[in-house]
Length: 112
Length: 139
Image 1: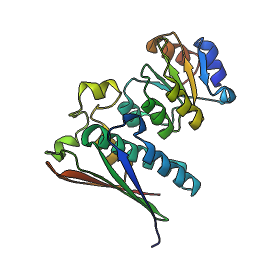
Image 2 (image 1 turned 60 degrees about the horizontal axis):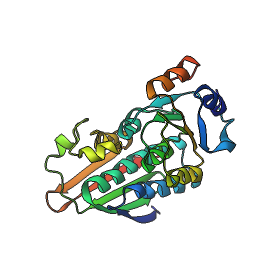
Image 3 (image 1 turned 135 degrees about the horizontal axis):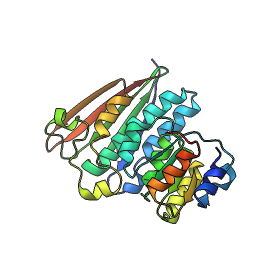
Image 4 (image 1 turned 30 degrees about the vertical axis):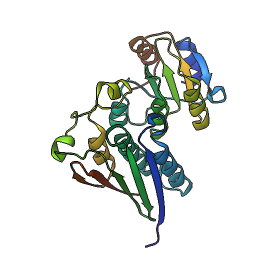
């Protein structure tokens, strides 16, 4: 699916990266522990998390991820959004909880 | 063999900027045409090292040597040192505080991750003096 479809499915707000919404994605992961993302993730292109600090964007950047979804209605501060813009990473925010957001994407065909 | 050298200061007081050196190295390797898989291995291993230096050792220096077929990374800090390296290498073992965990790190995966993504890793550490981690990644 495309990131645009993720936005629709999660009823998400786009915080930055609108120009990348038509990028195709195939896999995602959900975690609040960046250490685990770095340890276990392989080629996932979307990160769903409730963590808001700049290291979330840096972790995504190191893993070549394309999109971060902040769950539970969370929004990072402007410097984090600016960093993502600089790296060309799409930031989304959804009111859904981590488990529910992951479930919706999984049942709609996104792999783990 | 010819190599390109870089040196970075890793600011131990600024958690937000942790990862700057790794990002710069990642960008350089990409520009040099190193394979994406190798670039990612380097980025993750070095990023974990940088995070470690910030959360455990008040920062330090990262020295990087890029050769045509590999990268050598020396992460040098003057932190508290590691008393038991075997224990520190165990997945899940961490001395990180609750505060660090709330930032998404300190799962005890840093050193094991660095080993996993590198071809060679050496830790020289003296308690009270500091730690040097050597990482080699072949392209």
